[in-house]
Length: 65
Image 1 (cartoon, rainbow, N blue to C red):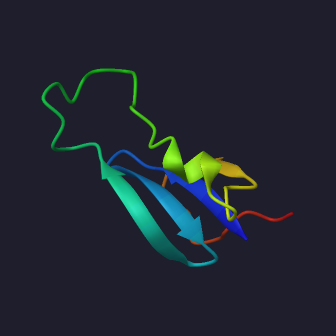
Image 2: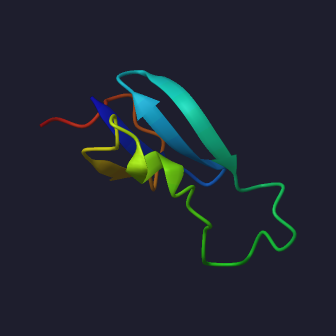
């Protein structure tokens, strides 16, 4: 199952407990910018994300279905 995890450092495309790809948020030209450019390819693949997790605080658990 693939899913998306958003932290203060990066946006991750996850597969279970490992990340497949990430968008680094700390190296953006304007780190205070509220919008994120999502890789559209993540949503067009046969293994597109089935869930989204927003981590406001670090959490060791992965999302439940």
